[in-house]
Image 1 (cartoon, rainbow, N blue to C red):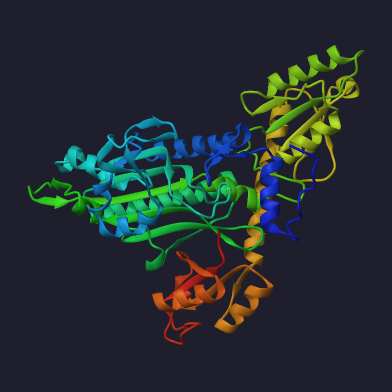
Image 2 (cartoon, rainbow, N blue to C red):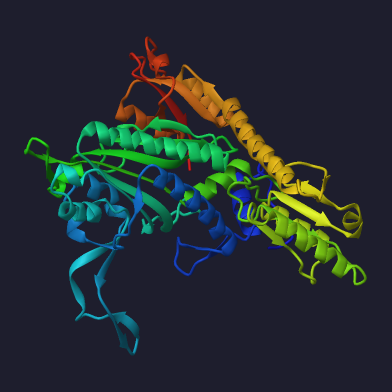
Length: 491
């Protein structure tokens, strides 16, 4: 962390995003291009996300398992759309050892693998291979498994959290006896993601379905949650896929139904990643640095003692008592470093996005009170350091969490525009980036043409409000509209 000024959002949003990450000490560069080192504060945000989601998954009946990082190359060829969708992003292992030479270490020519192994870009293929061994009867269904893992997709243009060659995520993979059960699962998990983003991240995402051109490789339908960032651009924050029987057919996964007939299994997959950390940064942070919702902040409360040699023992005893009262309910840190002045500590914790700072000096001890500063509001306030302190702070943090959601929702509403002509879309994209809700006739060629000219894409057909398309004319082709679509530039 430095005292470097953060680039204002209005001046250069991309540079601002990088500055916030740097000054909050979230990541470091890696010797491998496109990969990031998650530093403790950055990883702790992901841990908070992971722990919250893990509880939600288990509450809906899912269990965790782990599948191999390496996938036989032949597995990816079994589902044609799947291999086509991921072929350009796959990292491939061809040798199983190295050999030292005078020129340096090289892959040993005598250690070529019988079959190349793909480093996991996603796990559908290897999981459905295993499901083929586990499923034989309707009694084996449903299978509801989630995996917390890393994946590799060889991205050339990378940005921390948003797009990296290796990233952390979870991927759910479920198997069902009927299409209706699988479709219900697909929508249920989409709503789990939606509720998590609204309640925990304070990011008011919209649920929708992707167009055929944006669909997951091998899926019948891809549902998504889309969030608006402060600059008006969209971020796909998570996806849930109805896979139909595509992977079950590719890997010949069948089950004997109650009538004794063999059927192929119905499937879903769904996932979110460390991209959610990027969503939090871009949805909430300001020109002073990182801003974190209390529910996901690794440190929710930092206590900063203000002492001199003649009162240090008195102040620290009081601070330790306050910290003990708050721990167990909140994630608390006492910053008792003696090599930094209080002002420098305030600056550091503000840049790291800690929601609440508590300052304690000898006068506060005498008054049996604590002096508080919220990350999102100017001014300071005092709270009595009595038995009701934890409840009072809980109320303050709950109010902050709600206010952050309200602010993000107000931004989304203010920057979502209804337009009826393509010319209006182009004009407004240049002057006021945002989301553009338009009547649209589903057409892949027209979709590609708009993307090529404006760099705006169809983020989704929102699940709510599709009745508006009835009787409308497509804003681009003039034909009868089939959907209401959200166009936006996106990360």
